[in-house]
Length: 276
Image 1 (cartoon, rainbow, N blue to C red):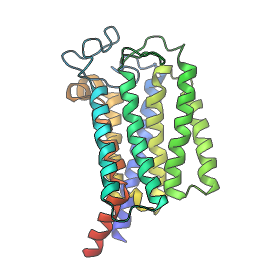
Image 2 (image 1 turned 60 degrees about the vertical axis):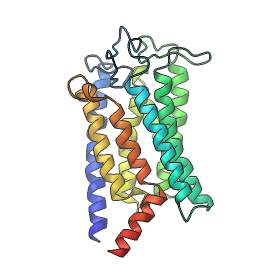
Image 3 (image 1 turned 180 degrees about the horizontal axis):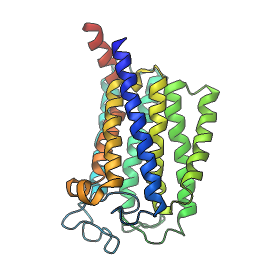
Image 4 (image 1 turned 90 degrees about the vertical axis):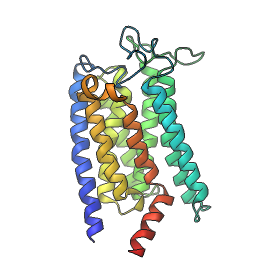
């Protein structure tokens, strides 16, 4: 009972922080990110020179926080695959789908970062960490954005309440419409961070009301941390976050939360509580 109360308390703290995170995003979006230090909505660090709106990532094409986030995400995707391999209870269709979905969330996020810092592409628009004119890619961006919003919502609500429940599908449609409408006037460069900061309350709401072990206290605690990192990114990019690595810390903390939701980790937690 005490552990369950601690779990719900932690998710409650995460939910309050996530609502603050969303509020700060909308404040930043009203100014189209001016003065925030964000590039295409992200706090991008780089070496030997930090990128800016003029040079973009031309002075740090190989060492920047997008590349670092991509490497971290590929590594944590591999960790998720390793936990699937080591899971003594693997093999069931439902459990394998959980691993596949969690790995997909991490990997697609990493591929996004790889795409955002690319300087050459034959069939996709070039961002190179920042793109001053997004009018030609907004339609393409919103198609990807809307599709990913629906899939992510379906995964989160499906994990929490069951994919066969009508609430999961209707909730996913409502969430997708709400996210697209609420971010429509924020400028094309803020579409993606808009998704991340709005999906936090959805995840925390699910964690607060579900009894599924995927939404355990480790996941909730890491959600508190990654939401705090997100708030720092929007509020203090230039002064605090960028000098120490930028957005990569968001990926590290968020995807450690995702890894902590794997059945391998949740089963380890159950075994420890049973032994205690």
